Amino acid sequence: MRVLGIETSCDETGIAVYDDELGLLSHTLYSQVKLHADYGGVVPELASRDHVRKIVPLIRQALKDANTEIAELDGIAYTKGPGLIGALLVGACVGRSLAFAWDKPAIGVHHMEGHLLAPMLEENAPEFPFVALLVSGGHSMLVKVDGIGRYEVLGESVDDAAGEAFDKTAKLMGLDYPGGPRLAKLAAKGLPAGYKFPRPMTDKPGLNFSFSGLKTFTANTIAAEPDDEQTRANIARAFEEAVVDTLAIKCRRALKQTGYNRLVIAGGVSANTRLRKTLAEMMSSLGGQVFYPRGEFCTDNGAMIAFAGLQRLKAGQHEDLTVKGQPRWPLDTLPPVFYF
Ligand code: KG4
Ligand code: ZN
Image 1 (cartoon, rainbow, N blue to C red):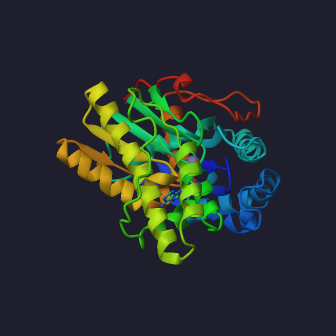
Image 2: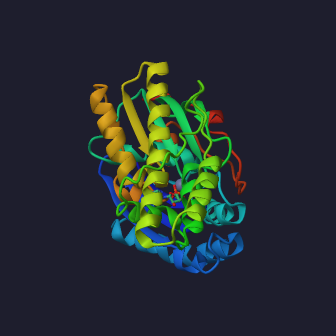
Image 3: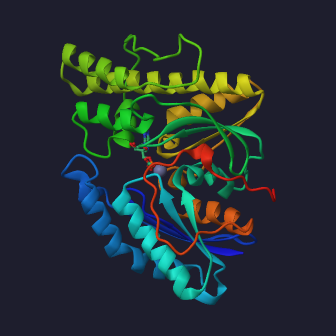
């Protein structure tokens, strides 16, 4: 089975062709980072318009790169939610319409399911069951995963998502959008400077997160310290360590609670080197394994949508003829896929 995947939930237009026997045949990505940089964050209307401009040329490119004729496609998968409604509707309109015109089934994919399954694009793919730590710009959650669509959300952020905390803190430090990777780069130059940053919500039981207090703590630290490059790098490091430690503590708890020994990390923040290293060390000390996607598939991309959509199309699931976007969509309401 061969599926065209379309991702347009936020500020990246990602298109891919995935084949369940041959693997990933092509993927193209256009990032709108430059477009939004002047505004310090994503401007939804500009995002939608840019998806409109880029989506068709990128689909042509992805099909060409995959050496795939329309007749060879067995279905079309597009991100249906969660995300920015205007941006989602561009992918949904184009995906649903092409599927109608080409007489193929279409499936609307949950963006976070795409992230969650992204490590399965790699050779060393995780087997079920596992615990997934999903950390993106819009969501942070810990999920008990027993199969595709068999998800139990164990905990989530009560305020800012992990990526959002990185982005907002980066802004406080005067770093440009998108702040997360820039803050991580600055933190790599930081030295341990004895700061005592909090590890929010780790002193109480439970698997929820809260990152907004950490952002305020960082703002107060910046205000109280000298304004030089090394001090900023030291503060960035202390902030990053606090986020990573907090996530690691919660992952350990989730593994203990479920009794599982496989951990998957995915979503934009899973590209963070300190997070990967800390969780890899933790899992090796626990005698378990950690899995994550290659760097380019941590952040938004079409490959994860093609892959997730294929699993559902293969199980006979598909959309009706209406064009739908779903900006809010709880992950644990997805139907299970049983053929695995
Ligand atoms: O999954 P994603 O591409 O988009 C959403 O679905 O939200 O995640 C983007 C988020 C942004 O907040 C970005 O700052 C963060 O992931 N991010 C990082 C790193 N790379 C991306 N945060 C920390 N360290 C990184 N290396
Ligand atoms: Zn995402």
